[in-house]
Image (tube, rainbow, N blue to C red):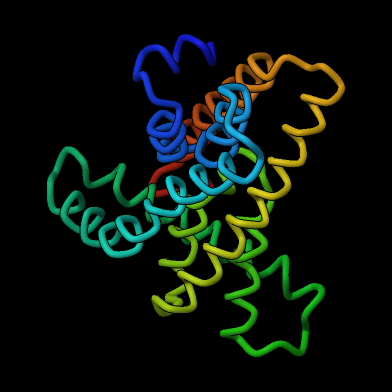
Amino acid sequence: MINYLSNLIGNPYITTFIISLIPTIELKGGIVFARGAGLDFFTALFVAFLGSTAVFFLIFFLLKPILGLLKKIKCFNGFAERIENYFKKKADSAVDDEKKNKENSSENALKFLSVLLFVAIPLPLTGVWTGTAVAVFLDIKFSHAALAVTVGNFVAGILISLLAELCSVIGVNLDYVLYALLALALIALVITVIKICKKPNGKEE
């Protein structure tokens, strides 16, 4: 698969960047692809980090306006509200989890830490796309959100890079790792869509 993608675009740097832009795959898939395509540890991390972080700006500034526009269109109104409520619930959950350990933290610091840790955990649907959406619905100001997402994404990148390095050392084919990441991303995406769609307006029945 790695060879196929490399040959399809013809440039491992561009391919890594593009893969890292894709929701749910993001940094994780980009780094694994890059290492399998022959890029060194730091180059793979850097290119994938740039690609995955780039989407922050689009999501931060466009998510609410796009949802607002969709809510004005009759056939998209219900789904847009469900998406909005889904991310509001994610935002509340992220803060509640941190409150258990940071009872005395200020509200802004708590929100910042919640977003940073959410993005730093390299699991499906915990990357820049979802993390930025969480930041938007927590009403974190741009500079704080940008720092939290960027630092969290870098931490996730280091963890995935170390995992890819370990797989290479012990002889695990990175094609298999990439397939596994794609499968997990697809499963997580399907489950999320089902959760959003099955509850009217994203609320508990």
